[in-house]
Length: 397
Ligand SMILES: Cc1cc2nc3c(=O)[nH]c(=O)nc-3n(C[C@H](O)[C@H](O)[C@H](O)COP(=O)(O)OP(=O)(O)OC[C@H]3O[C@@H](n4cnc5c(N)ncnc54)[C@H](O)[C@@H]3O)c2cc1C
Image (cartoon, rainbow, N blue to C red; front, side, top):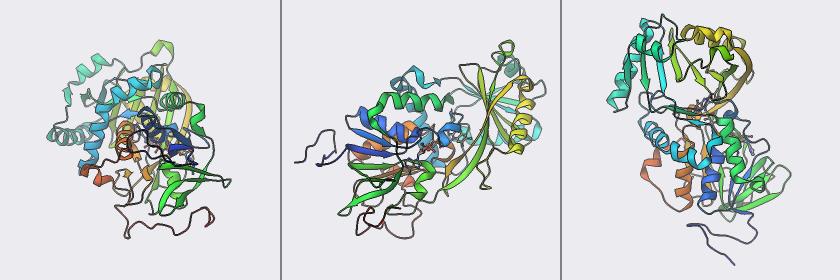
């Protein structure tokens, strides 16, 4: 007997849930929680929730300040997600660490100021709101800024969230029963549809819909009908404690260009700051000494008192990059039972509410041509391949 509950959901005998989400980073948890809120039974599979890119992320919700030329479709998704953040955060609860602090952009010298002027012109051409400031005004708002900065402007709309607190909050909302602390080895197939996952120990979990949201780990998942062109883009990031006498170090998120190199300082509610983030594709997941040096040097060029903080943590993680920097988000061809949500690169925290909303609508059977730019199979030279036998029968991954 089949029963239908939430819109678009068909329950089959033997299913452990309506939806299985592989991966408990911000993306998987945002999708899982949104699906659960819309009435679905959800299970999340992850041996180590929140330990991937989401563990490192600064949590800037930087739709405007991270605008890049020729990424118009991505810009639309980023702005949509930024608009969704206040409601998403309110529903996730005050413990998710969302703050509506503005972003202050600083240029260290005249060349940096010119680079920012070009960026501002492009932002304004898209109707994005940026407010120029004099250096005097910037230093009045943030007294610990370096006296020698060459230019400043603010972006009121770019806020922040603490991704570690967000992960903990969403896990708490979902409840212990929703988490399966195991690694997914492969998708499970049944008669041409994805029927769930095969865990590393061979156990099969079944559901009407399976969402692949395990970040870079999706590269190694068995049974995918299409190759996912993900690549690791490593970043070093620092956490520092601000001594009482220097609090607040800054009140806004400070994003700077220092001799062409980007750096940011994100103030948290608990009196710490996050400084990031380098970007390298050299294949090493270890913290780079040169990266730490550059971040501290460039942050001090903007906020000299950074030298007086206590360095409490250095972390490196890989962002899940794609060839066009846009996510792999949506269904794969006509394959039933499968949604892919990975490749969120530099913007996964910002894009969490939008990704969750797209998946909610896909689960309800809706589509939108605006999402075509993010189709997971847009780089594939061949159509989606449906395995003839289940992945478990073929020996998993
Ligand atoms: C240094 C740095 C700074 C960043 N700063 C920002 C920022 O300020 N703003 C922003 O929006 N974005 C930022 N990002 C990007 C952001 O962190 C990522 O886009 C986002 O975290 C991706 O989330 P995710 O859930 O897709 O992946 P992840 O967080 O990597 O989560 C993937 C999860 O899948 C699990 N997993 C992997 N394989 C399997 C498997 N086979 N079975 C089960 N589970 C599995 C892992 O354990 C992990 O928990 C930053 C990234 C880095 C590295």
